Image 1 (tube, rainbow, N blue to C red):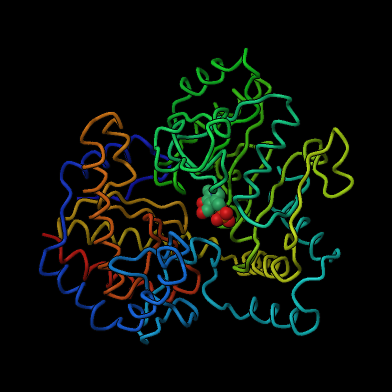
Image 2 (image 1 turned 30 degrees about the horizontal axis):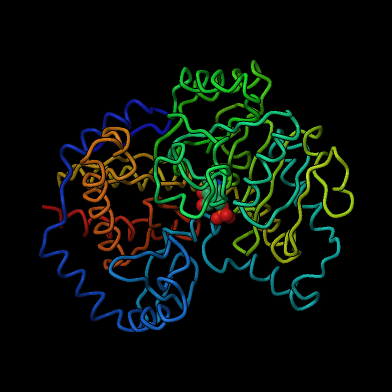
Length: 477
Ligand SMILES: Cc1ncc(COP(=O)(O)O)c(C=O)c1O
């Protein structure tokens, strides 16, 4: 039913997605009822908490990742590979906070470094700390394309600055990105496809996004055509892409596309920006750029470089470009690009990031994660065969792509102008929600949106995780 696919084989992923959309299965109604009953009876504390939260927090929820069906779980303890909710239920954590906690929860070396830092120095002073240099040096050491690094307080902020810097450096106006990609929620980058998805541009004046354009993934002719379209209207400053592809690689980029995109950026004197918010230090010490063998001009960071602490983000790249960044009074110069942020580069987050990066290197974590992720995904492909459940299955190291709904693939097979487009989306979304709900009820949490991250702390319980998936796959019609 589902072979394990190669993560660079876009054509195979696309073909399997088409098969999935035409043949997908649904969880049995009896199983869905049982899972709903789990939440009603075993998660009463979470339910009560959600009702209270709704009174003071719009929608009761502040993060898309927490958007569990039928209601969000209130988590009160996290330890190693597990999360515990307020009702005392235990879950394997394949969400990893959306990527940052690659080592697992409350990892001892990180906890100890953070506790020492807080005990001796508090959390933030607003002044320079040597950890800032240490983190920049570490990133430079592992990623040769990064000659200089500047911290920022989130991936969203770092994406904003990446395009501001690209425009200042090139003197050009337009930005191109993938349709369906994610680069945070700023006015210029939040929505996809030139504003066609109206739901994502409420409150954003047209002026804000008229210079941001989207192209289909892996289509180099489309990219060149888009560049040419704006040649006489201010030109294109940068092409920005999630290096592994849309939505952390759910729709994967090919190696050939990276090479061709680099060549096009050189040909038209524009910058190539890799958004490695998810992939830096997740796919390996050199990030996605080491895997694809291409050197972007700028790289956007977030998540892991903050070691699982708040205000994690940054931008790195060629010295000549990076030296245009300045803060405060020095940013008054015409040639500088202004950045700031009260909590940016705070020593707690910076030290946590340094600790995690060192741990990843000394324990050779990525080699272990590559191995165990492959074992897990092969096991899952076997389960999918045995229970005859169609799925798209592949992985970029410990980013696992496990899809039984086809949600991310719908726009590649149904045009948005098709009157049935939203029906297709809703059908896929319903199956997606049911699947993640079933996994949670069986004891494992994945990210809302479908991405799944294998944490280092779960290496010894990989078979328990496979058992959870088997219990759910058994319940498909
Ligand atoms: C590829 C990518 N870019 C940017 C962001 C935004 O980062 P943050 O949530 O830190 O603002 C995300 C967040 O998930 C992301 O996945």
